[in-house]
Image 1: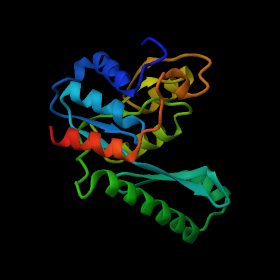
Image 2 (image 1 turned 90 degrees about the horizontal axis):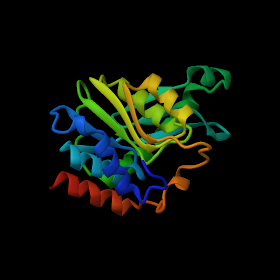
Image 3 (image 1 turned 30 degrees about the vertical axis):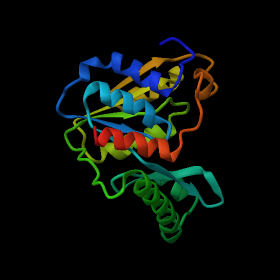
Length: 215
């Protein structure tokens, strides 16, 4: 993949060429991490003739240290906890449930805004391709993988245009396959490897989903 990448749509088209072997397979499902992953995943799903949906993830921030994730919740009612950290911080069940309820509310708000009342797709037995516009540390992607594993996919593939090589190595241990088009070093930030890395709006997300669901 030639760097810098023009934009997210170009990245999705390039991923589609690299993943042509997944085209027209009946059991493939493309899941995007919003918001940046949606334009990438839209192009990929279109080219593979596969359905598109979302994978929503919300961190459960530690009390007083919101950036320190003691777990996460994800689409489909799945919760992943770092039990060791929860125990070390002595977070009570009551506090944990309060934080989880708050994040669940935000997850549901986003789900409603993006998807309306559309039922979540069946994951069990599917070849799920999890897409973002790039990964840096890979933390959110790893939570998404753990959450999806609990729903028993037949195969779990991570597809990203760009990522640091050490993060790709970590993801390869947790996903069944990782397709990454470029692994520049030093990496620094995803946005450095795009010409256009402008923020994706909620309206763009919903617009692309409507196009995918009503071809």
